[in-house]
Amino acid sequence: MELRDQHITVMGLAKTGVACARFLAGCGARVTATDLRDEQALAGVLQELAGLGIRFVLGRHNEADFTRADLVVVSPGVPQEQPLLVAARAKGVAIVSEVELAARCISAPLVAITGTNGKTTTTTLTGELFKSSGFATYVGGNIGDPLIDLPASGEQVDVVVAEISSFQLEWIEQFRPKVAALLNLSEDHLDRYASYQGYIDAKLRIFENQGPEDYAVVNRDDQLVWQAAQGLKACLFPFSRKQALDEGVFCLCSEIIYRHQGQELRFPIAGFKLQGVHNLENIMAALACSLLLGCDQAKSQALLERFESLHHRMEFVREVGGVRYYEDSKATNVGSVAPALESFEDITLIAGGKDKGGSYEPLAQLVKQRVRHLLLIGEAAERMEQELGSLTDTRRAVTLEEAVRLAAELTAPGGVVLLSPACSSFDMFRDYEERAQRFIAAVKEL
Image (cartoon, rainbow, N blue to C red; front, side, top):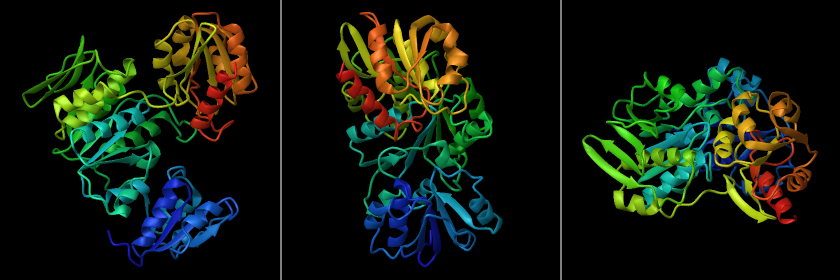
């Protein structure tokens, strides 16, 4: 990809935008970096990018920087309908995401993982499986470091494992993973997409450029995923916890079984640190992605017996007065809350936050059966109360700290207090990690 002397506009100076601007300047491109935040808000970024010859346009966007550019690199948070991007497209300007730019500059096989839930755990686990088998591995994308940091570093690796969001997939052109995994689909980001189908279509783009020599790892038990996978050009490699497969990965009683081209490998699950139905699916997907590219059975088994849950996914905080407190702040949609509710009974559930537009009705049966008290916070509280409030004792709290104190008063010994919001955090917190830390601090103060 020829970048030297190209006029390239980087839109948005969050983490990926900063990484792209630095990389492009290092390649000799004429970079304009533009952000609606002003110099004061971006003081740290300006210091980080100082001396690289980058032109900054801050506090505003200029249309000419988009319509006269050779290339626009857009941050994942910017929707396709943004007027300046529409104007640039009308002038024939190429627009790409950071993952598209990075993939064109990466020669190692790429494993790309998407889905509504479980992406981070599966991506992290897949990376660790490759590392345990001796592969020099770069893990990044929607978690950790931007993909563009790899070509920028000049580091040589054997394999790249990337978590990929629907937002990142909106602007791909040639992005082609050797192995692409779609874990599941449920309503999410409907504040961004005009319809659920629009969100599904964005996710499915992960397979768009694959051919018959590539692999599509898909969830056989998710009917939306399985139906969408039938027209793919890549070699289908399903995983299932409900049925045996002649080709793929499945769970049978106390083992995970991997079958591929006449080979069969068995992995006893008794010693696995990761627990829960959702993590069983994550493990099968990670095994599929890693074994297809040559990971070792014994080393994979050993890794699975020491790999533990990530922060902010069903994380035990402490027990107070016979009540256990769990933090599940990364559960930002309905599909990720359901497995959490399936894991306990006698639950005091703290939920709510910034509404993402989907229905909360899929949680109704679990709330009715397992949630004794429902405590709602944030912008979504009113709509959640309308859809779920009649099913159990439901109350509202102004702050997360107030919700924790109320939960402590209401929950009897033997019960569980669970923060599993089903919403994003941006109405009250910087991100889901800050929400998690605030919950943990409140619980420790009890």
